[in-house]
Length: 272
Image (tube, rainbow, N blue to C red; front, side, top):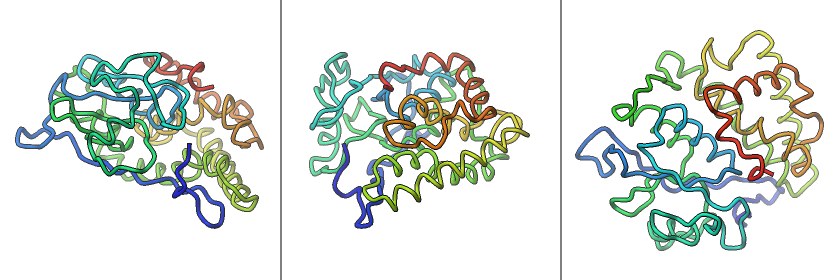
């Protein structure tokens, strides 16, 4: 459900800024010091932005370090709710309660994922990018995983491909689906498929997006790809092609799906 501020006068979809951008730190004097069992993720299995954080939590073997609660797949006028699974952390009925508990003046759209601090009873972050990177490195003392999805030597390349994929693909499907004028829709769809064509060509020569290893960039793209044919192609009118029509992109998506239990993070009943 969109907030009225997320539409421009020209009919473009304008995604709201994440308002909670604090950071869990390896510093005992920090407001949010790293700890096991203190922080929790609120997620939706339907949401691609939340899916990114679920994947990193899985790959980094942090399931016993950071708890996770799943909201209902369908929102009503009050937003994400807990009816199928009770919120075990705070007993919230709606995720919006976490937002107003943190900031009583909050009026923007309630989004997932949310990283929650159970000690101070407030949101640490609702920024999926930041949460991904916190999970990637901040909790390393509590896991035997040596995986690094954002290695120093590849960061400039990762940032560059992220800057292409985010507006044109990750957000591009929403810019297409939520456009309120034909002109805005056509611009978004053109950029979306132009970028998918580019990625198809890139993956004809490289197995992954950056270097010869899986990085954050791959796991930012995957949640959009896995939802594309089932959701975005029809519901969002991103229908010039399907991912299955791109041999390299489709094969790449399947490789990632079967990588290291990632398939366990995909729930098509929620996605659809």
